[in-house]
Length: 228
Image 1 (tube, helix red, strand yellow):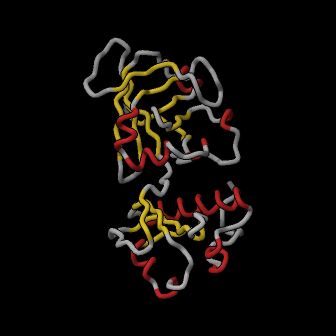
Image 2 (cartoon, rainbow, N blue to C red; image 1 turned 90 degrees about the vertical axis):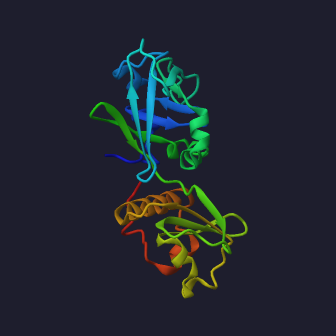
């Protein structure tokens, strides 16, 4: 399953997609038309927090389902198409830290994901977006995932993966200049490698270079980073 979109690809080219916004989940006009999604339809939302996955179960238009959310017309988005839809679920998004972090991203490409059918639901895997943030001196919960360091100027100086607390306390990093740690707990090595590579590639694409301490270590070079 495709987990995220190419940051350099025109969003208009992506057709079966959803976008996580502050006030709801936007459904791309082509996808909404393809599945016959109408205003007033009810949709149940299922969250897999450990896998950063969201599933949508679309009910028949005249059916009322307890706990489901209502579809309305989407007045925003990239395409401005009248066929786009929005699942209104503001309170749910705000209550889920990992989702709201995605929803508040300034880059629409970090909020837009492909979606595909799985059994009776539509499923989308989202990109972890470093929803936890602590000061360098804070004690970090035990767990492995992806993380990034920021300095006093809020610049990203390192992106990495592994046991977040152990890596922070490693001897080789005692003189590193960073004040804040942002992270997502994954506890899955394959996913950690994938998302570390994604965020490093995104940084390189946006700023033309890797974060400072990634360049110094030389572990992730341009040769092994995917072009995105």
